Length: 189
Length: 189
DNA sequence: TCTTTAAAAGGACATTTGTCCCACTTAGAA
DNA sequence: TTCTAAGTGGGACAAATGTCCTTTTAAAGA
Image 1 (cartoon, each protein chain N blue to C red):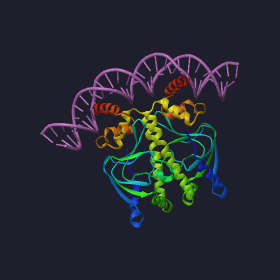
Image 2: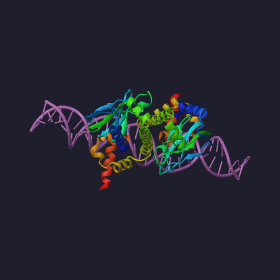
Image 3: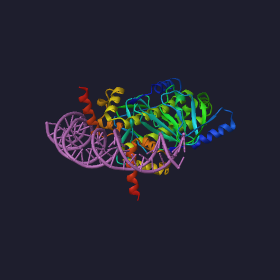
């Protein structure tokens, strides 16, 4: 449920050791908004520590969470490849520490470091792979099944994440989430 | 609704003209199954002509369509970057003509042709970008709105695609689709 | 042409989920 | 401390969607 990419994180550390490429550092407080959808940015972020959420807000103000990003996950990278706007807002869920890359540096690495290129390519592939079953599963299974799945992949999710975020992640209302949680509790007794 | 990637298609043509890289050709009949989920393949496909669907089937036999692939769209490419299995089945919706690349050739192009690398990278980014709003929209809006959207992006979709495919694409049952279509017809009078 | 099979349409009912509330708790600000 | 605002939990009802089944239509094969 909270995605990570250790390979990328480690590789960035190794880049820092051996070369002088300019990689920045930033920190954000919990709940701070980092990227806002429909805008244009020039920085790629990779999470060093903490959890962020990537979400879309529609015209009615409903938000739908695409994924929770954990250590080693990147965001803002799609804008390197085209001139398009960001589709997702990103905000910190907990205290957050990140690496930052300017588009120039990021591109330079992509072109000169084939291992880096490969890792990024694979990270993109993973994001595609990840989204497919998630959404199809959520459509065709009752809420309860989805919650059980979440608990398997991230047992403490109820305590760590606000209820509203969980609901927005599954794509349901807070009310429905509560109903399902209650029924689950009774079944587990 | 039916996605295309002209840039990639044109670039493949240009590769063929100037180099002798081994790119294959294949054709499939309508409804033919090309890739089956949870298997491992060694070929990347790029659509020259026709429409394919990329879908996931769950344990109960329900299928959920991820995207409809048109000219210039690639599939089977995610398996180049890792040893994982295919998540999606792919089958021909109409008669289909494709280019094929062995993993070896595909990788060779990625490593030696930086423009090709860029185009593929961008194609991956597009797939990510595309999926995000699609699923969130479908969750939070009534079926009718989704149909209106489809009609805008692909007016003939009702005549070209089987009803069941449309339903599976939106993530609803055929019954619900019919209901919504009927109500829409009456409103448009 | 007739026959068989699959796709499409829709009725009746059950179930799920959402909407709109209100009450209770908790954390932080005054 | 007291007060406010945000988060949480849940009742009652409405609306949307699914399930099951039957009928109709269209298409394909013999």
